Length: 170
Image (cartoon, rainbow, N blue to C red):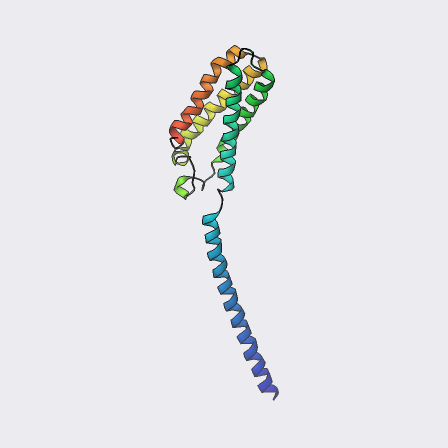
């Protein structure tokens, strides 16, 4: 009876093991399928969201500066922090475009594939913007409204250079 009992126990254990393995396999397949559905329904990837927020902040700061410079007495207390914010954001741009976040990766983005296929051109455009925003910040700190009025044209041209070559036409 002991032999038969251990034989029955072994068969039961083997059935339980096979059943558990099948259950895990089915669960894994179901989890993978639900992850694929979740990935396709997922919100914009974090890197793209960060990039969008960064550009919105950059644009908002530039708008504030331009609006102030259109007045007879621009408020440097508003312009200086906006210029500083622009300079910081301009230096962060290279980190906003990691591999895997472009249109060729299936990501919905206004960035053109040239960001990734022409990295030297993109880096040069970003450097032009960073240089322009550094000068913008210097003029703002100096309180030079006349210099700022002239220099915002260069900043705008730097922004436009990226929009023309690295962003979907709006």
